[in-house]
Amino acid sequence: MDHTRHTPLRASEMIQSNLSDAVIYGPMDEKIGTVSHVHGFGSDLKVIVDVGGFLGIGARPVALDASRLNFMRDEDGTVHATTTSTKEQIETLPEYRG
Image (tube, rainbow, N blue to C red; front, side, top):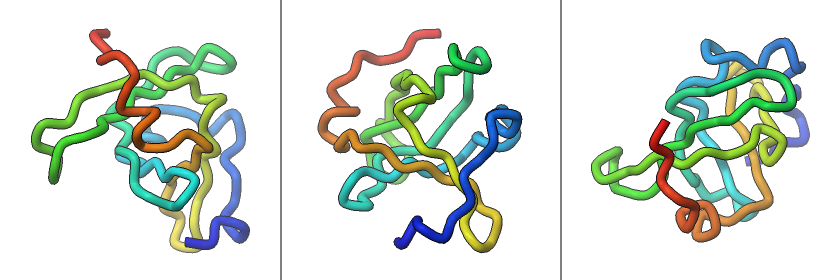
């Protein structure tokens, strides 16, 4: 997917209703996981991403600082994010137990 034509989200758009269910893509454009929910706001915003598993079964939540993710909208308005972290790196993070 070519993300260069996608519109970055503004800070004011970084809210639960916009980020919930957003797909997170890694550096090789592989799907890493999906946003389940968010905590905090501004520079303290944590994004809880379900990773691992197959078709949602066996996935576990991990917390990422929103600063590690580049959220954007594609041509259809769908919100997604990219990260420089690989799927393997994200999957080694401890399980989030909010």
